[in-house]
Length: 452
Image 1 (cartoon, rainbow, N blue to C red):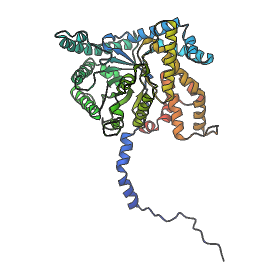
Image 2 (image 1 turned 30 degrees about the vertical axis):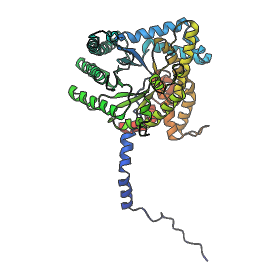
Image 3 (image 1 turned 180 degrees about the horizontal axis):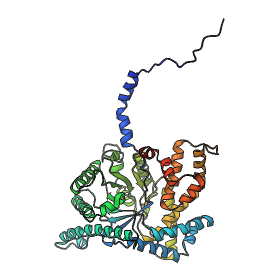
Image 4 (image 1 turned 90 degrees about the vertical axis):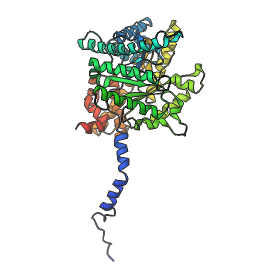
């Protein structure tokens, strides 16, 4: 008996065109959700920190003043290299990092500046409890909002002329949308944005304008902010979607709502793509859970839970994350300063390891350890990341077999280090043969597809 005949061609089709069309139709909503709701990261620069200053203390000279104060504090501690060793860096790494941090503090000490009209601001007279003080405070905040916009415009002009440095990102935090402060917050927002548009600074800022909505409790508050942004754009002749905003996650009701759902996960899909970032509010959130003041911190288990939910909520949406702050400042005697620097550097590193690439700084003396810890993070991982990237791009066998998703993560890691100044473009090119643009496209393939 002969061998059975084996057809060498393809098997007969089972799923016909009608079947495939039916599946396409059933998944059309899913396709739209993935394309519109989960576009991935834009590939643009994310600042490593946000500095908060009360609105009445902001001047165009503030970034340079903070940089000088940071360098002076480090010098008093024996210099940046000594400070780097003191907070845990090896002598070799400290020697690598210190000159880069010094250059950063001289040229761009603050990456993102928030002019604060909320917790960090109290209009003169408002706390006095005197007759007419509230009305005076309203007029003062009106004037401060306009002055803040004029100061931003002046800083931009000085930077253009080369007479001063400015920050890549700047904006305001206005009062929250709870009933007692809602209209005041909206008024400050309107004055600030309108004045920026009037002076021409709004166009000069581009994507560098950042608006922060604090103490969000419900999805409806974010929808209200999106409506306000839309109305401002229409009135000021701005392109639709021009005004994005950050959401501060600092209330437990946003993590778990009254119906048991996670309202924070709904936010990326209700604001027409306007939300740029979620910022964790360390102390308001902790206080809402009745955690004793001595134990309120960025590393409390309650904080980690909230931030893990936030991380899940924004995955794939393109919304960035920022950790909060420590209120333990490097002030006082030498021992107090050293302990505060060690704490700050450790917390910055902890956030970076957990995928939070941004945090808050509240004092100029925190800048040295912000950059020391951040630069050390990227430089420590640079050799391994670039080696794996080179092997992946060249399809060379190595000790680790990386998939495309891991290659994207490696490229994003190197790109972040490059954007903040921890790594040089020449180093990346020498070790991977990739330019910054090629690295960006490898980290963000949707961006590459959109530009081709």
